[in-house]
Length: 207
Length: 207
Image (cartoon, each protein chain N blue to C red):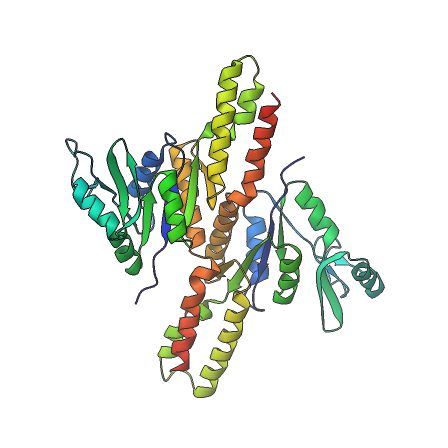
């Protein structure tokens, strides 16, 4: 049986560029991993392909998946369901391949509860990393804008605390680079490899 | 005050090539870090420089450092003391620079107790990773050799469990590559960066 794959969860505040980073990762000739296609009840748009962009399902079908415990995470936005079907994720992990989820923050927290050994990456907007400099440039922003910035930043930092890694999306290629290093490095973590070594020893004893 | 540096501990069974990997890391034009020079009571050898290869001290001086709590870790081998002076490590970390220690397994465990937020990297011999294949090549080793191999491997795996990462030293340049990825990636861990973000927010409030 192959070593189980690693679950990688890419998330972050809306508008941070999760989708673009995910697409760049898929386009990159990086180590083998599988992007987990989401399930949705929203209408298919022109050019979209079922099973590739999304699994398009009816509301009844989606709710029956939920009822059967078939969703790793899901949420409802503007009257439509979006979520990650558990089946494909588990199949791929069992085959020994890494799975990449690119999901909203609420969904990521549901996954964290079910898969604590996943790797949770928070993509941060560059203006969060530059907040201090931006605000120190007095005179460029009025008080209301500054207040709003601080409030948004506080919320984003509060989200970040539930993740393993914080990656700034200052430039897509740089963000992808950082994420790939995280993935490579996580594959070297002792809790992930120790069973392989112990397994070898067990087999060795039987020689 | 700059963000505190990260303590990186490179260790592993004796003979695994820790020194060679450390030298290759220092020769590499990688991100800024400081190698922590060890202190010893052994004789200086021709070509060695005090403060560069080691801090060379008398037995009395070394024992007084121990008594004053000045050693991060130390051990006695063949009647000589070897250890890491705490002062230089702390100074460098306080300056915001990473510190690399290359030490024996026993010393690494002393450091783990004092600095649980360090990054502990276990360098593994390639024959540990290949143990199964090697032993499966029946006929090439006699029973005593196989027994010895299994015993050594068990001990090495037991050591590995106390570390964060396991890096195979199959080729020095590859091992260095892996370690550099680990260091980059550890710098993105939320517990290491969250205070910086929170600090920004605090300053932002005071704008």
